[in-house]
Image (cartoon, rainbow, N blue to C red; front, side):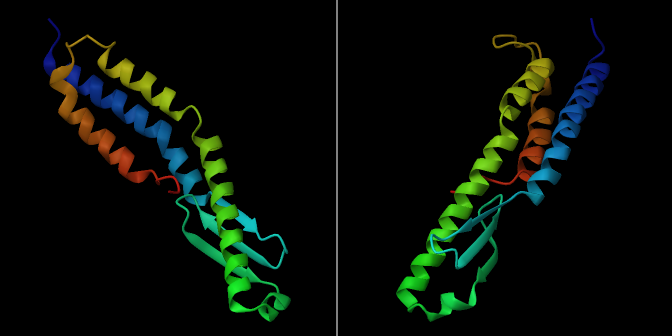
Length: 139
């Protein structure tokens, strides 16, 4: 019979390995951005990975348009920026679910293998911590 303490230590080590794999992703996602320009090229918007506005630029001639037109230009550039950020986010996170699934399979075994249930609480807490650090995709 395996010593339960050594089993927990092994689990903690494997969870730490999964966390390390995703630590670099967090740094990259913090720097991920998308930029969009309206069809006139007079308004430029930049958003972060979560779709939050980080920069808004107007060419001087954009200010000659009325408020309705300027609003439409800003919204178009913003939508394009969110789309660009979403595409970059999808490209960067492509395969992460499979990697995480593989990591979890290494930790808990295949579906139907209930031998590792006693370690689930600790693993869930670590995964919640990891999940909380990753940004959410734009809505």
